[in-house]
Image (cartoon, rainbow, N blue to C red):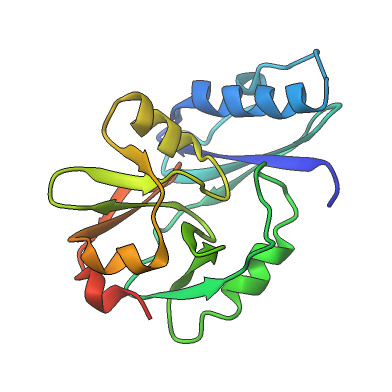
Length: 196
């Protein structure tokens, strides 16, 4: 896997959302590679003034290489197919998503897949996940990727980390997906009918 990474940043009506969390993740990636020179991501973002966009900012260890804007339409999720992959790694937001795309291609009639690693729930291909147990919203303690929205909601004590095994899923009352674009989106469908 090459060392090209990306940040997906929400921009709406010219406003950039939660940039400090994207900046922190970008800096943590560079720190992993012992790169001390960091840039201000905001210097590379000139968002469109009207509409909702997904800003895709690509960078490597030498700096930001590309910024593009894509009109955003939320993908409806009515079914998630559980797929097992015990060797997948995606601890950094790599621009290369071939492994995730290959899992997504196996979704069948479902809208996305929920990736199970070594018996534990991780993420979908595009979002972190949370489960409501009647009192608290729990998110897997070992996600594939520590998303920026997930981190913000943990910081705000709106969600709690917990190891979630595949057999635990049936006991939850609600499911939500979270990423930079949807924030925290509760799926209205009964969890018992969501997973296949």
